[in-house]
Amino acid sequence: MRLLLVEDDTMIGEALLQVLRAENYAVDWVRDGSMADQALQSECYDLVLLDLGLPKRDGLDVLRALRARHNAVPVLVATARDGISERIAGLDAGADDYVLKPYDTEELLARLRALLRRSAGRAEPLFEYKGISLNPATHEATAHGQPVSLSAREWAVLEALLARPGAVLSRTQLEEKLFSWKDDVSSNAVEVYIHGVRKKLGTELIQTVRGLGYLVPKP
Ligand code: CA
Image (cartoon, rainbow, N blue to C red):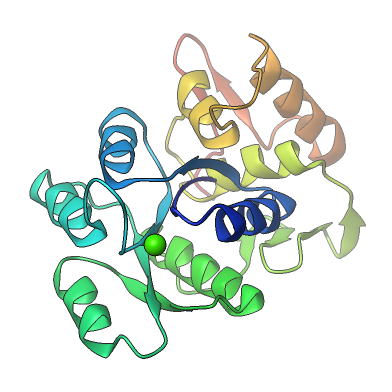
């Protein structure tokens, strides 16, 4: 999952970056409103964590412009604990949810998971597919009740494909979900992770669609 973190406070931003990366999200961090706007026009994110008070361009303004482009990416706005009017303005400008600053990390992560789930059209917290189960809250994977140890990126590949069984994701789309700007991406990285998943969970789980990409077949 690829997230855009929009936060102008260096200390808060660095702390969040660490927390989010530890949860295996690929994160791009920008520190002002116009950078946020540019990133949102050039990249495809699974979720945006948006501070509202930003230099250069206000967070609400970035959000309104995003929705005016019919971009439906889930947006979680960060507002001050006493900023009720700010919270309402954020939700009415197109935010999906809000978190209070200073952040409670566990609550923030739970809200992220809830939003990612809803945006993928899922109500249930686990990914379950033909005896395989992934728990995004605990990062536990099991196959027929037995624990399976997946690397962070094997997990990310599988999660992206399980989110939409039957849909083909190209190598580029998978790379976008797996890597942030800072990561060096080798040309066969996605193939390597898919190979790893197949080795651990069976070769028929992820199918290659020649010339197009990969899919998990509809159950
Ligand atoms: Ca701020």
